[in-house]
Image (cartoon, rainbow, N blue to C red; front, side, top):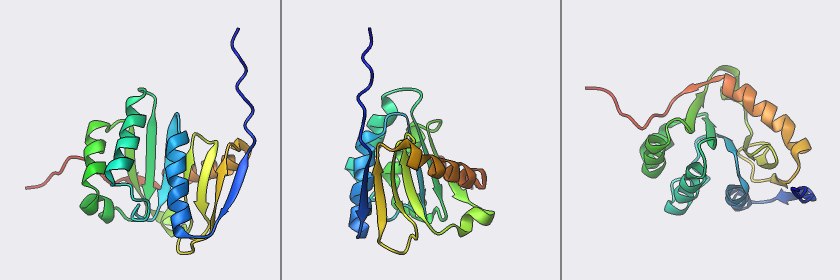
Length: 167
């Protein structure tokens, strides 16, 4: 007989500094089991190209064929020019790691957030402000952000590839 999963008491922590947001993101990377959804202006504040972060993302993607990372960005220049490790990971896991760029109304959205499995969230309501929130183990609070991400994703286009084309 299978045991029932342990009940997780939801945690909510207010974030006061940009470094708190980055640490919250790192914490979510340790919790994600199925999918990671990132909405950010350009990923420059998440230290996403560090060897440690890329290895964490790679380990997550290698753990199963159903693992996915969806990234929606306002601008992709930072990723294209300053994230070679992430681009290499994209080349290895092209069907599991998708990087899109917002267009239309989605390009005007001013918050940023990371959603892990629809259960955990780190969010800044206004990207240029340091304050935010870290939510752990609260699918009910995360559900509206999942819907918001889906709307942003629908108003975005594929924008970064590991392949370079041209003359």
